[in-house]
Length: 506
Image (cartoon, rainbow, N blue to C red; front, side):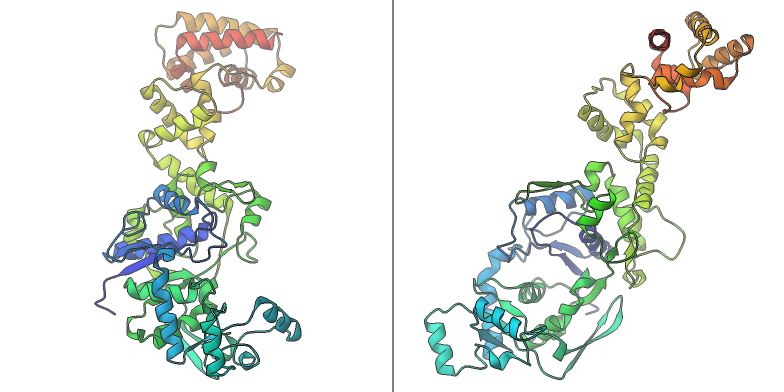
């Protein structure tokens, strides 16, 4: 295994939105592959045609593109092991399933859904396995003549693995170490369905073998399936080529009790999908991290820290730094609690860290969505630099900066009116004259003029600073007020003071 080229895969089902846990699985696969000069493969596991959702595959591709986690091989870019959609590989799975039957490791099961329902009612906690398989209609309980007759009549059937009795199966997990299972606790999983499509259990083993996958990182919810997969690798004669496995810890609800779900996000008011997903079956739109205003760099950064750390105090990592520092051995066994406030902190840090040029197009989109046109790129870059330290999510740029591109439509009048008086009105009328007479228009000069007039009129900063801010921006937000005035320019600043005075005195 040591000299085997590193090849990892992400194998989602195109059935709905991409959960942040799925993107973390992609990220850890990607980091490991790039660190070892290997390949990252995207394989679409669309064998469950009942759950297939139109558009879901493209959505997955779009999510990975937004994150910058581009596969080396996929249904779109192709590769030496195409096709990369399991539905297009359907004929080859039956060959392996039949081989398992021929060698006594699997069997045909002809039970109807009604027969299985009756058995479930008869036997509490029924499992189709060693304890009950002889009581059911399959090629182990029927004679060869009966089996042949059923097959010749094209009787619907599935192929199930025959789990051995009273055995212990073990493997070494890269995160969890030695893991063991008792075969008596595992039922005879279906390998090939009645429609000829493989289940996950057969398909994942066959495809990992044929695609030469060297390492398989997947969520810990797949751990109970490991004994079935281990046996399939053995029964198909591929044990020496089995990938090294790592079962990643769950991402937990904020209180730490149970796996984080879409319902938790809806209940607690945060996203759990990478990008917004519209479910055509339910007409339901679920918002994603992208649409709520997260930068992809921040999204990847926060996911990396859910269950992994580099052993130090560093929290902000670029993708290149993660490639360099990532270690699967430093992934925790324990589940990682999702903290939305911490997620927003990562985004705020990345907004600060990103250049105005890097934010420009995203901010233009934010403004365009609100009907604000931006015609001067250089002015926009100056504005972004002035306000980005105050923004947590990208839509915050609208509140923090839209007033640079238009007069406030409304004013926080309740913060001004109760204490508004003739002295303040006179102050601002004089300020208009002083600003109009000024030959220098920069923040320092504007502040000096303002403070000199305050002293002259025996007013305190608390009396006039807030009204001045509200005149310029409409509310209690934005950067340093004299920086705002300097950027707005003389004519615009004076015009806004005059307009606001009419409102304040109304």
